[in-house]
Amino acid sequence: MTIFRGPPTPYIPDDLTIPQFILDSHHPTRPVRPHGIPWLIDDVTGTKVGFDELRARSNGLANALKIQYGIGENDVVCVFSSNHIDYPVLVWAAHRLGATVSTANPSYTTDELVYQLQISGSSIIFAHPGSLEIAAEAATKAGIPQDRVIVLDSVPGSPHKTVPEMVSFGLRQPVSFVERRLEAGEAKTKLAFLCFSSGTTGKPKAVAISHFAVIANVVQLAVHHKIDDPTIPPEQARFAVGDVCTAVLPFFHIYGLIVNLHFALFCAMSIVVIPKFNFTDFLGSIVRYRITDLMIVPPMLVLISKHPAVKNYDLSHVKATWSGAAPLSIELTLQVSKVLRNAIVGQGYGMTETATAVTLMPVPQRLGNGSVGTLMPGCAAKVIKQDGTLGGVGDLGELVITGPNMALRYHNNEQATKETFVDGWVHTGDEVYFDAKGEMFVVDRLKELIKVRGFQVPPAELEGHLLGHPYVADVAVIPLPDDYSGEIPMAYVVPSADIAARVKDPKEAEKVKAEIIKYVADNKVKYKWLAGGVEFIDVIPKNPSGKLLRRILRDKARADRAV
Ligand code: ATP
Ligand code: MG
Image (tube, rainbow, N blue to C red):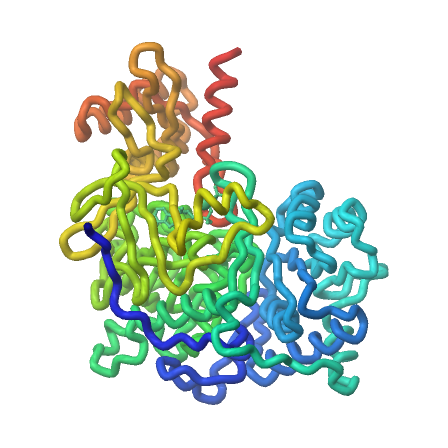
């Protein structure tokens, strides 16, 4: 019976909340942050925030939340905001009071937010000015009084309280709350977050995550990356003190929240907080703040490798890019490494249900090889083959994973909990295999494999291959129903700048399509060929956490064919 295991579990405190861990205590793996290295930098204003200010602001806000709203252990606080330097302040203020935080996607419509407010049982909302109108509407629909909608920055004419007002009120008042010390082991069951999965395969699910799971993942990441190992030469050292990293990934999603925010702060890095992704502005920020570490997702790596503007920026100081949340092919890895010549091009794998990462590229490797890396300390994995038996090295099957960073359950969803969280193991729904060195390769989501005459075709493999073609700026592969084969693969392609004009001519477009189809036929076994053809499209639909929304394209293909 093969169980794949990462290194031993490191020391993870089980009696601390997240703010106590990040702001009030010291962990043996944690580097010392010299005075003067800011914690956060606002990309838009250049404002720098340090430890004293973050700690004081979160304590002040906690005090105000207690005095003005009586927030305590049983409350759920919803944060409905794009990235903002006060984001951690809101989170830690709620945690200081024992409350749970539910992070929501700021581009939600009113009804989508209402769904999250109701599922999570939120009783108060923090909203970014740009999301205030929707927050207010959703509050009414969900039965939350308007005075419980608080805006992050002041909005002229708005009746809503603001965070800066509450912070200064809270700091002026005597401290009204006693922060409860957790019992030994209590952090394992104490809820920190209700984070929602990305909704790639259906409706987002509310994932209940403990303080311990988050702290565990931060420690696991630090130990895996050997951030405190003095024998690693500086050019191979990852996440060094004083490095500057991006925070363009949304903090409402687990990757942004845990790895990009909490882990980077633990490592004594400075984080440039970017509220909205615009590629050329992003390149400008990398140069302006001399950003060394890019925590990003594959669609951004596609832009780095293909966008014509990149050559106008000197990115030679970038030390590392870290990709997760969606497949990063070996083809794309190599292309990015040509553009970012001095950078590690790394990848990890995780999900909301595992409070982010369970595998990461091993140290001291510099370049990914298409794998998502090795298991992190304390994680163990099984590969369940199609026949239900356990697979060994090289066998394909569903990844089932455990470790100290597992979420507790889906909130208010017993059926889904029973299917996914089984005896402490999380059933991921992803097809993977391990090689002899313990590196894991993700094939694709089981639900999204295309079944051609009984053979399984992973769309991610074809997408990775197609991105290697100069005509292809972006691509998604989906199944079309087919009488003979059951399903056949087709590709939606965004034409690259070189051929965008050419494909406007229908005859030329047909020639280009034929070349793309041939590129697959020349390199892949016959059942993987694009028998469903190629269609051009302006953009591939993606969600903010970086995933292709193939289900939208499947519906489009079906609708186009029905006409
Ligand atoms: P939902 O569960 O609501 O359909 P989701 O699964 O996309 O959405 P997340 O929890 O954000 O929500 O994403 C986890 C999934 O992302 C994993 O199950 C896996 O399919 C995919 N994933 C994460 N990292 C990688 C990676 N490095 N390579 C390939 N896929 C990845
Ligand atoms: Mg999922």
